[in-house]
Image (cartoon, rainbow, N blue to C red):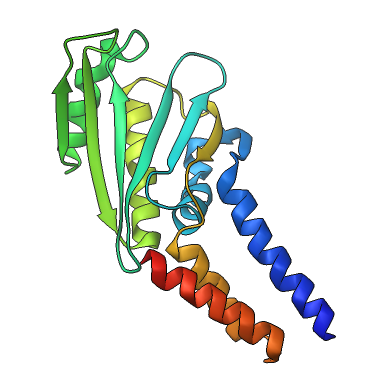
Length: 198
């Protein structure tokens, strides 16, 4: 490839990462059991403070978690479930189910607004294991709420990005392409961004 081709490819990759992190991407008609890839992408692309949401398509309710720690060797997400009209009847059943599965649940009692209580569950680990753990938690919550396995969701993410994982993946990808002046500049830039965020 010519110098200009590599330059355009590198600029395009960086622009795509910035664009993807800056705007929500919607995936419609998703089954929850098939969302591990979407969770993995969320963990690898976005940064601390980003939110992953699965909204039911045929009924009230949603499942959500936030990326609260984003280090190269460990990430953490906080799952949150409000005690509101669509979850209230099954809220305690969800807590019992998660406790029985070994998840560490904490419940905040709120005295104002429509939300009476708020369930928080933190999951921590490396990206592949954390993706599986987060999916397991979401499946257990959906089951506890009485939602069918065939229920479809619209999944979307929003928040800051790209995170350190995205910059490291870009740097690693640039290591595998032919070395010239342009790829050297792009590698240096990706490495600086990664080191700044880790």
